[in-house]
Length: 87
Image 1: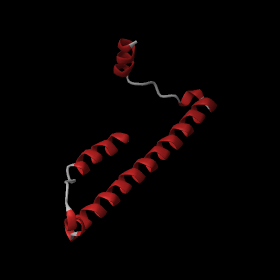
Image 2 (image 1 turned 180 degrees about the horizontal axis):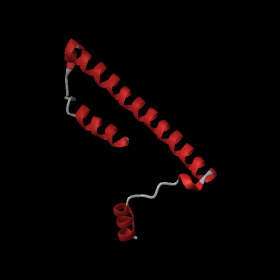
Image 3 (image 1 turned 135 degrees about the vertical axis):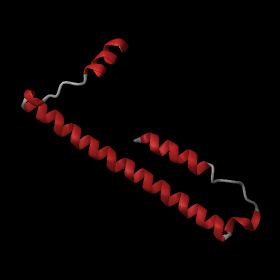
């Protein structure tokens, strides 16, 4: 999920430009600043929530597999082949 944060940082950085003097406080610059702040905060919170969700589901799957090994699903053979190639 962190790749979305990196992508958004690249997109956000294209919106930044140098300003001088009283141009800092124009309505357009204030809007851009708040929009970048809140969109960055939103992406970060989404990444946090997704990470927690993946952790909870992964933990539940590991505990279920430990309690009943018949729940294990055999991975696709192409994935197994790629793992063997990378070894």
